[in-house]
Image (tube, rainbow, N blue to C red; front, side):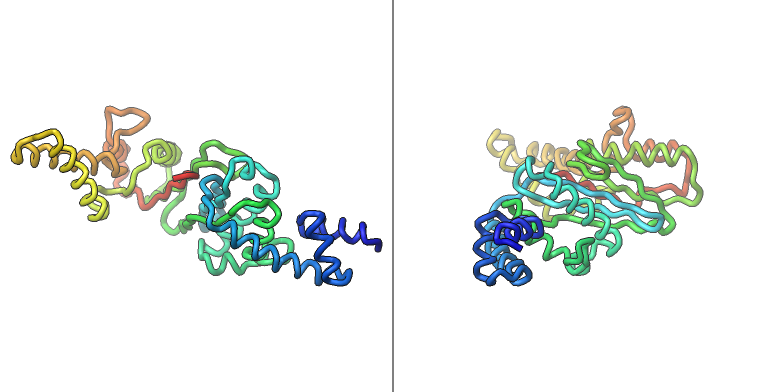
Amino acid sequence: MSDLESVKKLRSTTGAGFKDCNSALKEASGNLEKAIEILRIKGISKASKKMSREANEGLVSICQNEKQTSIIEINCETDFVAKNDDFLNFTQEIGEINNSVSSNLDKLNNSKMKNGSTVSQNLINLISKIGEKITIGRSKTFENLKSKTFTYSHTVVKDNLSKLGVVVSLEFDENSNDIEQFGKQISMHIAASNPMVINKDDIQDKIIEKEKKIIQEELKNLGKPQEIAEKISLGKINKFKDDNSLLTQDWVMDPKFKVKDVLNNMGIKSLKIKDFIRIKIGE
């Protein structure tokens, strides 16, 4: 094999640039396997430098089977890279593996991909090839045990890859067309309304305290008397809880109703919203 053919072969295998491949082959005395190893070590060095940068773009992948449904985000720095075929294929395969390991990050990183290398190794190689910070972000798996999951993807880029993904789990005794319709609608509602929790009592105390301080500062600047300020503050906090809790949000399909009203009006006593997650790239 000529020197030029060796460089082409190394570029095809690793995706590295011509100069890097040529340099690695010289260092490895023409040994392809050793050259790949050298590039990987250099790639690790390059990747580590990129990890200090911001990665606010990327894609969300939703994968499911009969037993469970999983969602995961893979982040990069630019929307241009998020549409790159290598990034798309990587994210799609990661989504499938993530579902098979039930969103266990350690298992995911050590899982073998189709090319025989681990997720971690492929991630490093992809960073070196593309030249951007790429990270594995939020993920969650829902088991279909006495429940059923419904999904919604917004701004779909390809197949199950999008910029915003929602998975919601509904619990019920018997399935019906009404539940199927509600499942689709509630996943769309969550995408649009971005609730923090299902019930308002589940909002973390630190979030409420932070909101209280903001409201108090706002009222203080307006010069409201203490007694009036306390009443206004209480009202604003209650509204904050209602606006950020799924069951007390206005139903996006018909704002005259709350989500809990729609749920009650279905007349299915066993039906309840068990859990949900909403992942939007950049949030």
